[in-house]
Picture 1 (cartoon, helix red, strand yellow):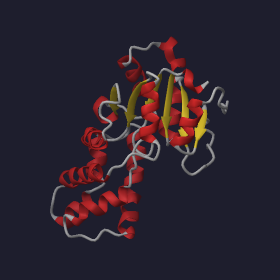
Picture 2 (cartoon, rainbow, N blue to C red):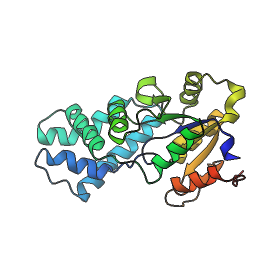
Picture 3 (spheres, rainbow, N blue to C red):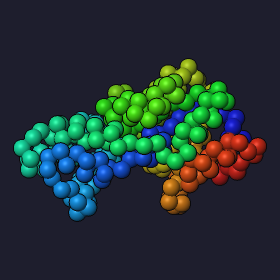
Picture 4 (cartoon, helix red, strand yellow):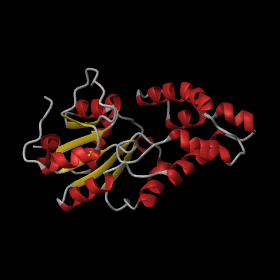
Length: 235
């Protein structure tokens, strides 16, 4: 039963919050009088996506990722890459919205006296601003940010650290559910840690050999499952 869990771990981007990087970059570059179009975004992603893989694999630091992805534009605009990254994260906080159903899901879980924690590979500068802007800052017992602890999902150390914060031991893992939209980090990370997982599968894609305990296509579906007596597991 999915409602047997007492502790819910949530990814942030595209799990609780919309993360429209294209819109955020457009908002940021408008401040430099630059029209940032889809062609620019595609070029940016050719660099940004592999950097994220390297970061999740522990091959580069959060700082390296954030600086490297803006080096081209820093040279073009004659500003520092660090400054561009800061402006980008500020823009992302300004345009942020909760995903459809996120607030209702959180309210339901809190009413059931569940413990909620965010576990994110996102960056520190964005998290508190976003929580405050969306009115969700008091909902979470802890916010675990990979940039702060030195490991990124799917590294099992992220989850060991989180369980320690929650005062949970290895015998308590059956009480914990990890919810996220990315198979390679959120779901594989939960599997690595020996905890159950729920994949927020927005596009109804195949699970590519990484098998979550549960799968939903939106947060309202997850809320409906929590209200049911016996939702279906995938294992």
